[in-house]
Length: 89
Image (tube, rainbow, N blue to C red; front, top):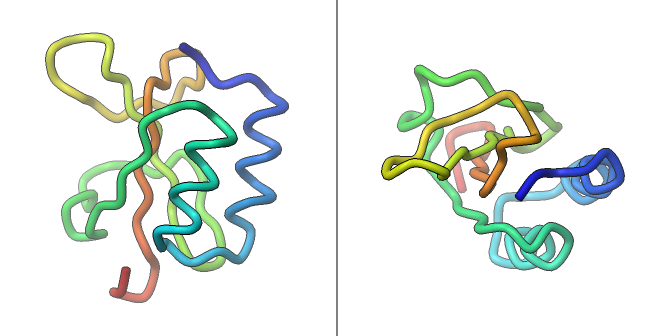
């Protein structure tokens, strides 16, 4: 599966000032149909976010192979990962 430009726009709207909470995760799952997970920022310290927002960062997950990896290419996104800014989830 891949993320289309319209879906990316919807994600931008949803995450503009959103917290990384259960409601936000559920909304992203409905918008994209993808797996969405929350991670601690420290666990993603060596990765580059796809996009950053006021209260969170978005990473695209490529799960086409056995192990997940972070991608910058929406064509290969099979999932999303969110981290909260400011040290809290």
